[in-house]
Image (cartoon, one colour):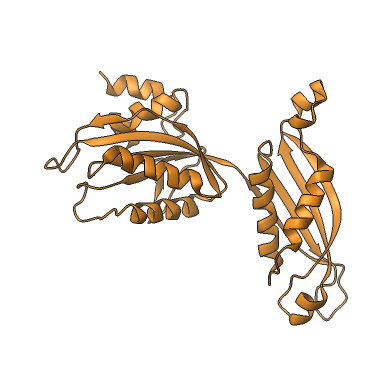
Length: 271
């Protein structure tokens, strides 16, 4: 991936734990590394195909100085999120934030933090079999898309499917979406659970009726598990009602454990 570098950009701001730091302010030094594709910009000379680094510095300075934070960790997170959300071409950003006048009480060149943040691609399965099912799905998609750290980039067709496991319930309406997010898997899962609560999801019967069901199917190509989630979703390859809508939006995506394309998994399940 191509890169743009901004090294040692000086900004005066009022971040720090102590009142003197917040009241008097001090110098901070920012270095930024942006990962993006510069091929079109290089071939065409089109400024719209790159990031104007002069504008970037001015915008970052505005973002960095508009609030006061106790921790430079918070300040640098805000800057990283701002860059990713404002500049669509940027896929990943690394930021080093130096604090030369850190109140340590000993001679030190600077204290610093370094973070790297970027966009991730997540595939989510949605289902509903209570109330206005179509509205429930559309409301969930809107909630995810309106979150300031995520955006829905693709949506499948809606499918009517029979219930699995607990059969004494209405048919489901299912779909799948592709989401670009800067949230970690745990943060994204927590956000989905919050949206389920917003849409009145109740967990009364295992695999029972629900206003909305939001499941992470795939998150980039990672394989992970903890008490809250397992990625890839452990049963996705067994369920046509998951694979069929996913095939609408990502037919050639490869399952990271099975090493098989979604379109091939669908073909097997459809036999």
